[in-house]
Amino acid sequence: YYPAGWEATIDGKPAEIHKTNFVLRGLEVPAGEHTVQLIFEPTSNIWGGRIAWAGHIVLYILGITIVVQSFRKQDQA
Image (cartoon, rainbow, N blue to C red; front, side, top):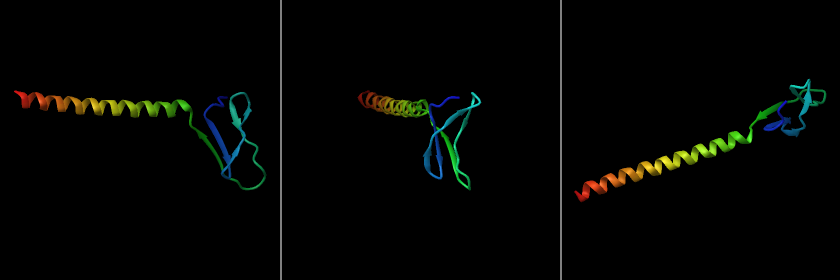
């Protein structure tokens, strides 16, 4: 049972997630037909994506800087 990162909705409304059988998750769903959605989105995924984007931006800037520097050296020679 890992509660961090899990969100649950029943018919689009937030629902509380309960610990069941030491390992599983459960929801109290009223009688009738409903749409249940369990979403796993831990903060580590969000931060990992942000760090990856920052790394890409740094690499692009570094690549552009290297290309510009090589053209400047060719013009001076």
